[in-house]
Structures are given as C-alpha cells and as structure tokens.
Image (cartoon, rainbow, N blue to C red):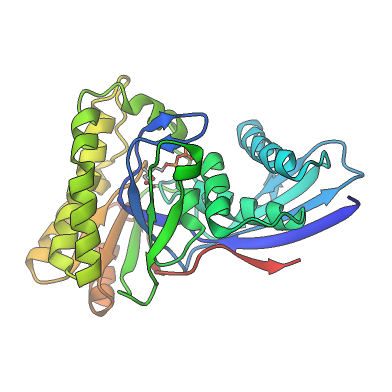
Length: 326
Ligand code: DP6
C-alpha cells in the first residue's frame, strides 16, 4: 500500500451512568448500557502512518516509546483494523494527550477513539459512525462513546453488532461543565480492564446491574428536561454503586484517597448551599464535579481550596472524533 497517513483527534468522556463489568471480555460487550458527556476541552491527537518499510509497529505515547503493555494493546487494535482492510503493513503511531493519563480521566477512551478513526482513514476503509464506534469499543469500551459528541448512550447489546454508541443530544442541548479535581496524577495500579473482570466477583454487582435500567431512564429524562436536581441524585448514586462493587470485589479495589472524600463532601455542601453541582468518580481518586455553566466559576474557586487538590481541569461538552489531517 506504500505510505498512508492520517491524524485524528478525540476527547475523553465522563460517564453519568457507568460501564463496569462485561458479558464478554474479549469483545468488550458490557454488562449494562452506559451514558456519558464528551469532554471537548481535553483531547488526544493520534497520527497513524502505515509504511511498507516498517518491520514492526512503532508506538509513541506522549513523546516516548509506549510501555510493553500499552504497545501490545495498540498493536492488537491495529491488527483488527488490518484484518478488515486485508493488509499486513506495519504502522508508526504517535499519540499525545493534553491531560494526565491513567488517573481516572479515561485516557483510553479518547486514545482508542482517535486511534480507530486515524487508522481506518489511513487505510482507506469506508466505515459508518456506528461501525467506527463498534470497532473503537473493542479497543476500549468507553472509546465507543468518545466517537460521538454531546450526550452519548452506549447500548450494551448482546452481540458485536448490537453494542454501539450514539449521540442522544448535542453539546449545546445543556452546556454542563466538568470540573475535574486532580488529587493524584500518577498511573493507577489496577486499570479498568482488570477491574471489569473483578466486577463479577462482587455480590453487589447483580444488584447494580438489575437496577441499571432504572438509573438510565431517570438520567435520560433529567437530561431531556434539563433537571439538574434529578440528574445530581442519580449521577451520584450510580457512581457510588460502582464504587460499592469495586470495594466489595475480590480482591477489593479502593480507588479513593482522603482528598476524594473531602471533595465528595464539599460537593454535597455546595449543592445544599444552592450550587448546581454533583460528583462522579471513575477508576481513580480524582473527582469529576459536574455543574451548570452559571455556577462553574464559584465552584472552581471552592474546589481549588480543598486540601489535597493539586489542580482543577475544566471542560465543557464537545464533539465526537474527527480527522484533522491526512
Ligand atoms: C470507570 O473503557 O476504561 O471509567 O474497556 O477495559 O478500556 P476498557 O475499560 P474502560 O472502562 C471505563 C470504566 C469507567 C466507567 C465508564 O467510563 O463508564
């Protein structure tokens, strides 16, 4: 095929209704439908260059050669795309993110969404958005959602064909802001992929899954009606239920640090004082504080001063993955 190059950008997302646990780990068919907001102000840019002269894939992440584990995961994903395109050409991949990876900001979501789109375009495949979302899902579950902008639902499905994401409302429908309070920017010890396997060892996971359709329906309605109070209650309950599963897995996963709990209490206090704000926590100690735009400045000021907070990143809702250069 000679040389073919494409660069894509994609944004991470914050799940309001979380993905935790799979029906099928190899294909990443999730145990429940999830819902997220795409975070437009944070991004990963990935260049994929298929080059016949390369003997092996070369993967760079944030300017340095990728670790063995990360490079294996990227190569496995490139193999999926090579199989569809019916090519053997190796690629050089250069991926850079504007936010710390491995700290519960779902860097795998933006990374695999950008990688999927760039690689597919570089090898001239014609895939529709749903097919792109399914393909990204196999690299990292939450990447299926980062293919789209605004508010995004990833339908769990029971087969590969049924498990894809779609946007249910655009970024301007309700311009919520995510203030991400960073309390630790180092790489987490137990990543999500391992965590999804542990979910089924918790006796609470079945209860969490049985109640998931109810939480999803309430969340969808809150978004459609822009009802912040209903949204806050369900988002915090969904996050707490996922962490209850994590903490009761075998071995147990405890992602929180003392500052995480300080932040949860601060958010609860701020809401009782009249600010429209709620928290959601992924597989890490950092706290996503979701608020309405009119309360973002006041909330940011308060969050910055919580003991243990190193930094607060702010992001509005944004667009799905897109090609920026070919
Ligand atoms: C806690 O998508 O990171 O952020 O498919 O193994 O890459 P892999 O897992 P990943 O899991 C995300 C878990 C979560 C919740 C969520 O984003 O829904």
